[in-house]
Length: 343
Ligand code: ZN
Image 1: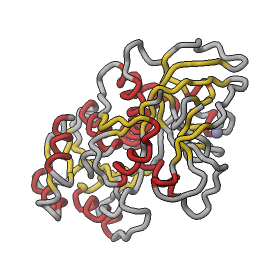
Image 2: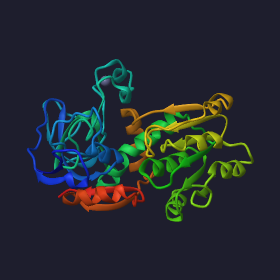
Image 3: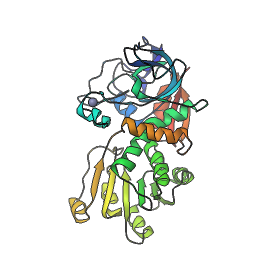
């Protein structure tokens, strides 16, 4: 099969469009012929590598994908060949105490497709049948692939960890990334008032089109926590979604007493300083999570295919041009998700 892979860690130039043996489905597994894959920032981090990361090389990146069932392993009866599916990249073992309790994103032997195992920048991928969600006829493969990872992540964080309730105010730090665009829509669907702080007018107009109620341009309001305070009658917000990290100090200031800070990542880097006095004096809860459970995935993808949540696709590149797609993401030019079209 054709795939995009790398033999060594480094920049986008390490990505090669090459031949690689197609995988075969074992018992309980399904071979999926991919039509679309979507990029995540994680793909760039895995390609660049980090100390301690040990991958079987060559590695095929990619967590998100959608396509059709091409073959079934022994014992698979829930799907048939030709059915359209989207992939859940959150790979629980299915056997540990967390998985058996339905908390598979906390699995003791957790893997993420495209991170620790070969992923979706390829014509075919093999997955356990429980990782697949059936798509209705006519639902766009690119929209499905664009939704899979970020919507389950935002759903788990806002609804399950954050227990967001109707009437609450939510501040989302960042306007245009995949998790943030998903968070804006999910918060609105949950009945919250949504404030978004973004880096420029173009990204904020995307946030507005997704339902954001209040827009704060940080190119004009450097100390945006002050603006948030004014916009909430000096109360602060109930919830902040902060996946930047270095912005925690401003997020703490923007929160009301007893508020919750939700985080699923750190696009600004993993290490930063916080002033702990804010945490205890304001009774702030910091709630971290990663990905979602199989149940979260089913819940949120049902809303996506039902049209209640609408994934934003930025730009689509042919699989062979994955390098250009990575370069676009590295330049932070995208509005929504970048996808790959797989022949
Ligand atoms: Zn497990």
